[in-house]
Image (cartoon, rainbow, N blue to C red; front, top):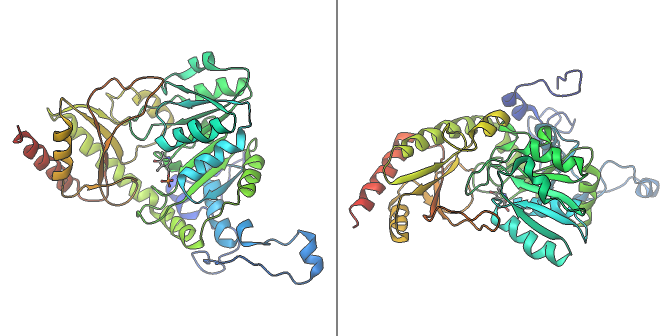
Length: 392
Ligand SMILES: *Cc1c(COP(=O)(O)O)cnc(C)c1O
């Protein structure tokens, strides 16, 4: 790969997605890496067995398939190294356990993925880690929340249900001045649109289940770390015995090759649908940092190069029955959790908040815009709005 004087890749993002993880000398003449199903790895003789020098020693400890995806993530995130986890949530918990010890204090953004919040409130509490939730828009004022034992700040920008953007560089500057680690869940933007490690994070988490895989058929997670955190990450990941099956790794790598064109399209389609929704009288607010009217737009524009296909709307004064009727009437939007696939989806969002109460009374409808024709999607939404208006 071409590199500049600082050792950074100078290739453009689409090229990087196609080439990353492919320079490991493991694919031979084939474009794609082998799918190695392995537990036992054989050694030539007992000297090799004892030396610890052989490149591959045991299935869980690395195979050409694992290395190909780890290499791709490391390059895409601009990291020192990365690990693979069996789900996005497992990547979240692995990253947190990498930096936290009993007696530590954790600062967690109020808008993070709910199961990440539960991990802090349940498991980390049990392990003697105290968590304070903070307003995701806090910026440098996070300094006031630091305690002498604050060891890490965990955030997700934008939050994948309410879509507030955090000022990661400002928060990281405060954290690093106090020797704390910054962990960022980058699932929404992916490294195609944002590289948390280049904006001050020490660990970047991806639910590969979403855009990396892109086809709603794999559960996988990744954590990428800078030089400060990578050794700790690798050791925690090894201690916990985490590994991912080779077929899922292969599908994720395959997904990465087309992620740029999918995301470019999903960005445009989501913005088209979001702008259309802004013009509807039924909609009070559209939650999408890519829209100039969004409170997070300026920071989003400063830090990110694009927006993905997931956003929310807040309806005007609908009852839950109306929200349900709207969703049940949709033909092209499936009702289902997760996102990042090629198909459009919708859910009803009910944010859990403790630091900043979610003041909008109405329920959020979250939309994932897939690869369908946007005029079909808009027609589907329009027909559902019409059905709901005939309701009462
Ligand atoms: C889905 C998701 C996760 C968890 O990923 P799984 O693969 O479902 O465990 C973590 N963070 C965010 C932001 C997500 O959307």
